[in-house]
Image (cartoon, rainbow, N blue to C red; front, side, top):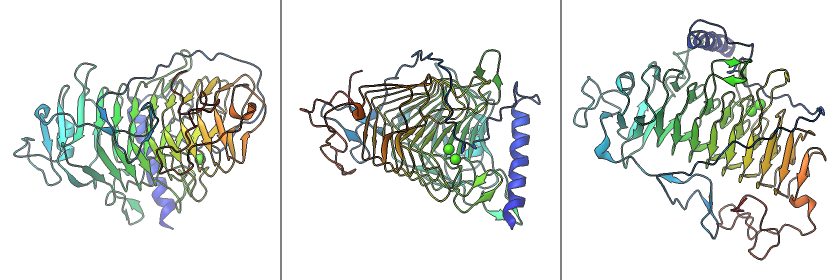
Length: 456
Ligand SMILES: [Ca+2]
Ligand SMILES: [Ca+2]
């Protein structure tokens, strides 16, 4: 079988990358931030450690407009799911590429190739990609040292009114038992901060379509589909066990549509016949925000925050995960089976819809000090809210309806959730295409719980 050799090669490549990214050094503990094997679930009761400090603030989204196709609106226009993202004005463009671009001028009249432009952009640049399919073969798309700043980020975006598709189908092609080059689509490495990736499509990559190991980046209005592994991964190159901080974080992932990413049919190495292709994996990092995304039909989990700290997951629509041997969870909220290491903690999930997943709507996994409030779980094949542990979770004002069972057990602090109230949950619609989907009627006394509750 070609696949074993292929995977050995990818692992070697990945190991080399980790080594290089750490400046030749060794991470301060043995945690491999790239490993995303989270199949194990910790259901052991743990002594109380109720530090649930809420330091996470929802960032008000900017530069968005209504997209009626993929959104769910409430009467008060409270929105969950991916919104349409407006383009940066064309007049702000400084650098231009096209699928057939070449040379070094990178102007609108004479665009250059994408990998060339990425090596040369500087803070304050707006790189517009003309529409069409960029055949990403052996070139490595990455931002490594060229960093933006808080006031002058680097913007990489589809040309206004057009769609740039980064296509890895040739890059991922298996040749003589080996991948033809690095199977990851695009890397933003530590050293390159304050990058905005906007309105770009990523497809057919053999590993992650986009990996970010740096800080203060924004990914918005992008689409990721038909990749063979995690579509979008936020991670870090090291964890400082003295400060309990990862080397990176503070990234914002919003208004993306992420679907049909799957490692089903691939086994060995880091592939698990569906068990490792999450939509969004936050496998390390501090205070990342995953907001307003639509994530569906990925083989493993929709959003998995394994090992990260203080990740906020909010206003997302997550449905229909679970293909082949994938876990099929909607949203997983942290965890690290080694409890002496202080990561996988303080995930905060609010105002999410999680439905039709093959496993749980929301899964504490082995997360600690997790807060789950104002979410709606519907028609998940297992529990609405699973693997609850005393001292590690607060569940307030959530709805579970038509799940196999609302909660896994009676553990944790549970207050004012639908399964604890006398009134039965009745939705205006259970049709996902309706803009009344999973909304409670205005006269319901339950209208202060669930994902569409505005105030909290
Ligand atoms: Ca898994
Ligand atoms: Ca997973």
